[in-house]
Amino acid sequence: MKHILKIKDLLGQQVRTRMLIEQFAQTLVAEDEYLLDMDQVEFISRSAADELYNLMEERGHIILVNMSDFVQKMFDTVVIGRFNPRNLQIKDVPVTICPDMESLSHCLKAI
Image (cartoon, rainbow, N blue to C red; front, side):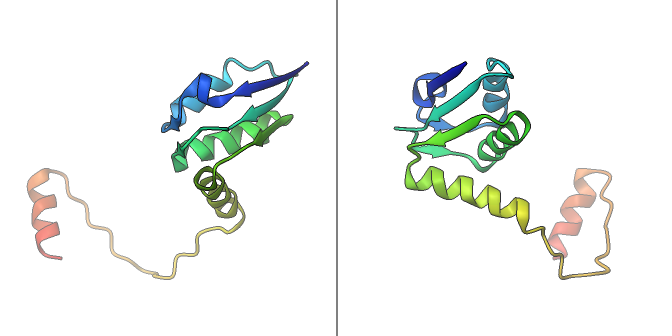
């Protein structure tokens, strides 16, 4: 079965948390197809966009349409991050263990 869902009506104009996408995912039928209409969604956090990407990868049959420039850029950033792994340039970085707030405060003051 195919569904068109207006995300603004379901999740609001600002999609800020991964948990919101996780809860939304639980309402979807795995075998069905979904067109997620992002019209009037002004903001999506990176974590929410990442979870939406996960949902699309896991379930398939999910298409996003009508994304604002900001939402599109955030989603693109997540996708690019998936295919360009982080490359740590610094090696042999010492790890300092701070078992309490006093030692953490002391370490931070030393920087």
